[in-house]
Image (cartoon, rainbow, N blue to C red; front, side):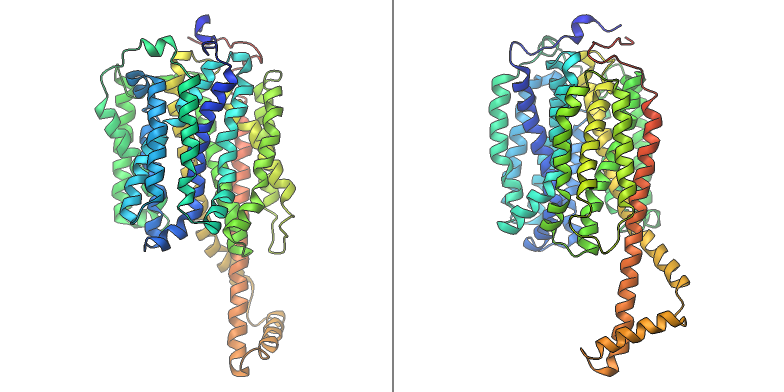
Length: 523
């Protein structure tokens, strides 16, 4: 059973909500930056004389460095002190943001992004562990609702804010915006956060260099494969097959080493806790769904309906409003209702809305999906907060730091996998649907000939009659391509809904933790 003292709040007389705001600033800044940078990529490429493919390394380099530091954050906090390490990470992230904005060349910004990713990697797990320890168990649901504002709302607001900054000023301001936020975060963390006794008196074990190296290899290979796989035909490319080989070897070695070592960099034995293991599986699937949705929905408006990046961001932005509306509700209900019911509502709501998105067509207005988009954001609030509280419900405070690194890494990995799968489906399912439409629509059919004649007649007034029929055929082919792409978006939306419904089954495998009471652990 968990020691009673290990479940007590450790806020040292400071108002825990001030602590929550302090750590949320750091998390919000880090998550927001990832979403903003994705919108600015075409502008970065043009400004630095790089191709769009080369510019994607601005995202990949950050994600690789971020993924390596995430699970290692607990060791660094024990070695250097959690407060000192958190402040150092915020400073590194903020300074690197300045150099990203001032970058004169692609190589310069890639180096700055690697440093920025290393600084940002520890912000989420450190913030989450500090927050959970600062509140008693019966109030952790409300605290995580505030934390969720940074994790869930920031990726939603990012494209809108990034599009506005890029269009109005320059892509460089997408990075400069971190400077005032980072300065405020450093001030608040320095003033309101203190290290608990087990951190202050901790003696970190010898640094696990082998574990860190293996972690860097497998996370780096995974991210590069996911980022470049579709471009290079996945296993059709020799370098991807080699990267996959090194990924499998490094990951297997890392798991065996971390499980057997007495002082591993990442203690994987925490996964033996039933609730935490299930929570990690669910957060992986949740990351897969939410990041896929965040990526795909703006693309639908841009590629099929011709919206600008800023306009698409405005249309999907109300999802953030839904999340904001859901935060106080989940904060109130989290202490009164079994979290499994809340999770079921969240996953079912997200799945139903994904099915609704699967009925889109090319004639929708900016307002057509307003209510479903807001409802999606509302449902997300009922997923992230209960998953987190349930996952940590049976862990001691001194286990939370290590667990938080694993938990956040798996959410990011799920997001990367989801984006990669969605991007691949959009390309390959478009080809499949185009072939199906061509096989169904014969050029000898009367209605096709009538449509071709009608378009030819219209275009004959716009161009030379001799060229009108070729232009008409090209127009119909363009419409065919649009329809095929539309159906590929429909496939992605329906695929996400199936994953959400499958998650409901896993939810009911959680061990019940009574709302409003310190959970009985298995330790």
